Structures are given as structure tokens and as C-alpha cells.
Length: 213
Picture (tube, rainbow, N blue to C red):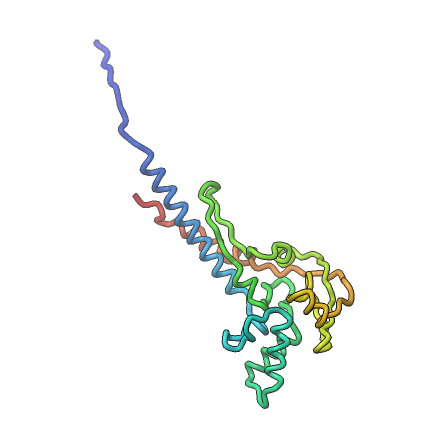
């Protein structure tokens, strides 16, 4: 019985499929980063200064100087609304969020600074605040930091700064006096880890139907 020889040639080209997967990866990672940023931002509550509307903020002033001006503006009013009284109290008291819960923001920076970036080469997305990495690490994992205690000569109030008051060196010498440096213990107030844990199931769902020809 003669042997039958059969040659099989496959015409399958995997490249279109691989390109579709790569496009889906970039798209899904972008959606995941944007969603996780939204969840993290929404977990951080505004307090004091950061609750002011743009028209209520004193020009280009920032930090302690801005808070002082706002306090003086509110103090000159004959009657404050309930919202203004709450903002005034929060500016003066600088309340902190309960340990273990996402932090409050008094400047608005930590909330607004949360960004994300997709790295196609590593097939990953990075999400988190881009400024003050030392502070973000303390928020997530706890630890200690060195704080400088400054006295405002005009108001008589005492403030804590990581570095020092804003403004020129001449203005700093005129308006502020450095008292001492202290070590401050920070309890963890995680917000990125909590956002990820809260969103983990939803993040996986972004892959559903993502690979399209």
C-alpha cells in the first residue's frame, strides 16, 4: 500500500493579534489610571483654605501668609455664615484626619497633585502625587519628620514648616522668627493603597472586551 505524504502550510499571521493586544493594553492602563486617580482624589476631603473659592482667595499669596489674610478678612466681617465659621475654625485649628483614614487637605495640593502615567514598555501605569514624595510616603506608611517651629511676629501665632515660611529672605527675617526644630511622629493615613483596595475588582473589569481587531 503506497504511503500518502501530506504537507500542511499555515497561513496564520499573529502580528495583527499582537498589535490589537498592545493597543488594548495602553487603552486599559489609561482607563485604570484615570479611574484610580478619581477614587483617590475623592477620598481626600478639603478643609480650611482649600475650601475657599477662587474669588475668596487673597491674590497670589500662599501658605501661612494666605491663611493669615483670610483669617483677618473673616474677622472684620460683622456676621459670618455657617460655612465661613467652619472654614475659619479649620484654618485656625488645622484638623488632621483620623489615623488610618485618608488625609485632609488644607492647601489642596495633595488632592490636585495625584496624576497617572502609562509606561508601554513596562506594561504598567503609575499613579500618585508627584510633589513632596517624603510626605506621601509618611501618609501611606507612617514615620517621623523634622519640623521647624516659626513665630509670626505680626500675629503672634506659631506655625510648623518642613522648611520655612514662603517669601524672600528679607521678608522672612522681618516677619518671622525661628524658634526651634522638633521631631514629629506621623500616623499612617493611606489614600493610594485604600483607593487600590477599593477599586481592585473594578480595575480588572476594564479588560472585558478590550481586545478588538
